[in-house]
Image 1 (cartoon, rainbow, N blue to C red):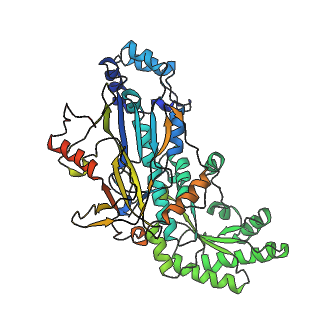
Image 2: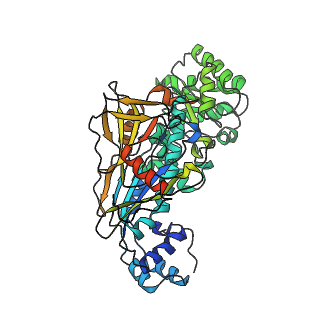
Image 3: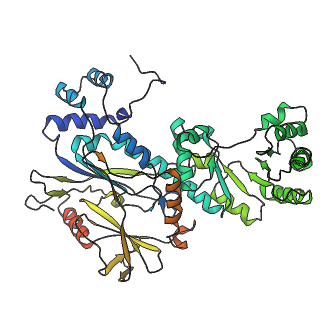
Length: 490
């Protein structure tokens, strides 16, 4: 019997089918318990930006904690006539027993560095690939876009308005979460407030105004019902001839006698720069200097920057479809690649994927990442090295990833490890921060980037370099066509 859409989903089954066929294969050829190392990384920053914002770890933790196969799941797999009964019986007690390291949510990150490293028996590591990528790719994409939009707003409030244009229910909900993490002040998505505490807000649609006999009656009634939350949509008919004047009249007759000065108007169409400048003058002349002007309608970081450059009088931006779908760059592009395996003696054997497309050649081995900070407290490089290397103040040679002939020797610096332990032997060891804490951390970390890295056009190339030892291991594997030397273990 097919599962109904409203049945409770077991997200363990949200996997690519090849994970199950490989798992069955590993089980039956004796690789079930072979320890593997997988890296999650991305190859290209969305919108040709200088950095991305990593997100989604909290949902990945929940997923790992709940990994299991129900009898219904096993019955379904049995019906495919591909899996041995021994493998299906193994799935009955399946859980994650490995280790996971991850870069904390809200950290600015760069291409080709590990964002998550999984060390686990082969089947366990393989089974979790799809969901890890799903959460990290989606939420990192939206958090990165939200941060771009919020930086374009130059301190003005940005609200996420995109639920109705999101690509599915989960995209709307976790997209609102990621938007808040990236810098948005709130959302229109009520369930995101209920689930994650992302403050939901909203007032009226054009249909409210159309429902009444007159625009003024619609505004006056709303002010009477919600005197402390009166933001009036003024562009249903004629923004400047009727909308703003009727809003001022309603404010004067309902709010002023109550001593309420906080209110707002919203434009959802038209020439935003011209309309807001004219509206600001009308509101100020009427004594409503504290009235906030909100603008929405297919905004993004480019349009917001342009509006501010034109002198638009906008206090709040409501951003919908171009944020919740990251319309200009709809894929984050994170991948999950095998980096190493352990032999029977516990030696770590590096693995590499080679491609004629050099961008797809992976960095082998069990690795860690250091972020390098200068004396000013600004970071300027990330340094990827083998897991047993220590960066302790010795001079570092760093090469520009886009121009390898450009290099610098760094001596006066501090280094911080980016990958933090999340699970050890299947047990959660990470203290999960609250979403407001993640948002504050994100803002703090982005402030450590130089402005040249944060600009939208032609951002500075941030150094992401390999240690000499990691480069030696990688080069040896490249020279051998990817095949490890039998006699050598890392």
